[in-house]
Image (tube, rainbow, N blue to C red; front, side, top):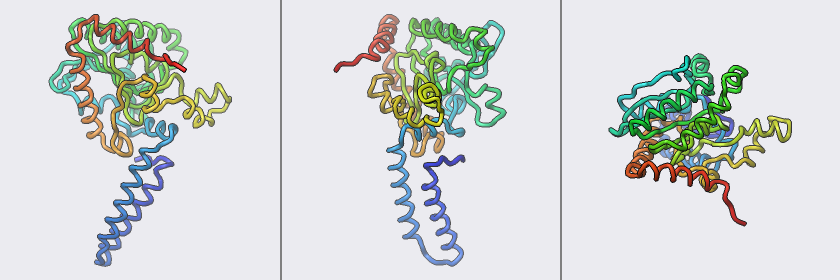
Length: 316
């Protein structure tokens, strides 16, 4: 597993514990008390470290290559998943995957951005950066769900929509804009979860929802800290400063009513225990589905509209 810079002290402590265990086995001397003390100290330090991370450290966890992706959650949270392909205009963008599934027996339409964990997978999924065809595919699935009264769940983990020339030529901006407009009018509950990176319109194109949840170490922002630093200081190395200023962490977003719920991650991040993370998220999703199941179409639309109108309102 890739070790982040700020995590190295934890691994040094764990190495000392393993070393002491080896000495104990080789010499037949009893160091159980010392090992127990060190393990307790390590766990306490680890818990304190991850509870007090700086924004840029959280960003590093959100980008961790072993972090669970869309298909991990599908396999662990749902049953009877049937993938639905293509935008019906000639392309199946693999950066966005979606289909019909059941969560705790409840039929849903689940759509999300997909990242890879290897170079080969990242090339297949375009590093989780959708093209216009991906947003059109997503909209097709949303409209299908609305027609057949299926609640919609979206899982978002993207550094943004693909910025290539071809994407611009085929209507990247308008594809996202149409999604924003049409998602606001859907007749069924929409629940969005920011599971890792939630950057720019590329994330918002799947997140116009009645309820927006975010994992504890995920982030959601109008621009990446590197992009912000490049614009303001003409120096991407100032990303740490930008991350602090942008208020992109889950706690800040909850305080500003940009998101509605923070989903707790295992100590160290979702990648430390993917099964536990999936189970925790599943429980939150089931609760959210129950919350909206008795609302009428007009109530759902008004709820969605009111949520986004409240954003940015402040008083001095």
